[in-house]
Each structure stands twice: as C-alpha cells, then as structure tokens.
Amino acid sequence: KAGVTQTPRYLIKTRGQQVTLSCSPISGHRSVSWYQQTPGQGLQFLFEYFSETQRNKGNFPGRFSGRQFSNSRSEMNVSTLELGDSALYLCASSTGVAGVYEQFFGPGTRLTVL
Amino acid sequence: AQSVTQLDSQVPVFEEAPVELRCNYSSSVSVYLFWYVQYPNQGLQLLLKYLSGSTLVKGINGFEAEFNKSQTSFHLRKPSVHISDTAEYFCAVSDYQGGADGLTFGKGTHLIIQP
Image 1 (cartoon, rainbow over the protein chains, first blue to last red):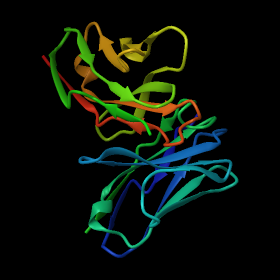
Image 2 (image 1 turned 180 degrees about the vertical axis):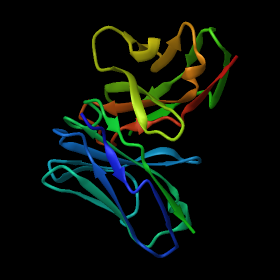
Image 3 (image 1 turned 90 degrees about the horizontal axis):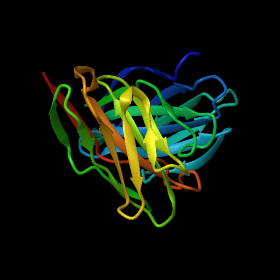
Image 4 (image 1 turned 60 degrees about the vertical axis):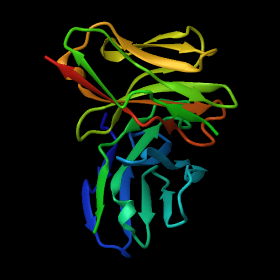
C-alpha cells in the first residue's frame, strides 16, 4: 500500500506570494491533517479535513486555508507569504478522525520564504 | 486546551544502555496519548499509543511507555538502545472528542546514541 505523498518536496517563494501544497493520503483514508513544523515552535496543528469538511482548525491566521476533494486528496494554501511561514509542512492521513486513529505522515514539503 | 511538556530537549545515551524520555501533559478532559519518532528528513512514525486499558503500552522497535494518570505522565522507555534509534521523539495528546485542538505535540526530544 502506498504511503502518504506530498508534492512538491521543496519550494522557494518570496514574501507576498502565495503557495499551494498537495497531499495524497493512503487509499481508503478519509481524514487528512496538516501540521507546520519549525525549530522554534515545533509541530503545530493547522487543520483537519474529514470527508471534504474541515473538522478542526488550529490557531493560525486566515492566510492559511485548505480543502479536501472527493477522492480525499487535500491541498493547503498560504496567501501573502511571510518570512515566518518558512517551515516543514507535514500532512497526515488516518482512517478515522485524527487523534483517535493512527495518523500516517508524509515526508513533508519544505517551504522557504525569501 | 491541552498541552504537552517534554522535559528534555536532548538526551545522550551510550549504545546498549537503557533510556527514558519524559513526557507530561495537561488537559481538562480525558486524553489519548501517543509517541512518534522522526528520523532525519522523514515524516513522523507512530511508536505506540495509549487509548484505554493497561497503563503499560508496548510499541514498535522495543519501546514501551507507561501512562500515569495521577502524575499526568507518559514516559517512553527502551531497555537497550541502538545507533539506529538516533532520532527526534515526540509525545502527543488528543482529547476524547477526537481532538478539538487537533493532535497537540510536545517540542520533541533529540535522542543521541553514542557508540
């Protein structure tokens, strides 16, 4: 069974631009969660989507948004990029709601904002 | 809201020695507890989880953890470590309602195995 895939693996953007990251969950998984990982703040929960609906949202500004498609694939978008958005963005999928069912993580997308 | 504190940011241990990575949590409701491992340039992998039942939980790669409700702790242990255990270890918590705050992670503990 293929694991969680994230594309692209690396991205370099400049301040003010916007970016879209993609996540393909494990086949059959209906929940997709996104996390931001930085050396200073560690791993922080962004949001969770379950069956195309946003189920939970972390404490991030509205510049961070996401969506989930009918095939469970998910995208997250960051608009008006800031230097502080440089981070590793991790996607995780699970068969049921995150926090109860085991989450399987992708390798992440490394975003650098210049 | 829930929170997780990993008391050590870095733990150096000699190969074949035992190790304990400490984790304390706080929450106003009952919780589920997890330990994840992250190898360099990779995503996270679940080591073990506590949902209910026996407070001693066994996971992969010889790791185990003990849930202590009175001390709100979930420390991770391994009796004998190997070079391959060098990685970042994260403790995480979610509430029974499936994570109104999502999965909350600690800051991580870097386990360094010395030959």
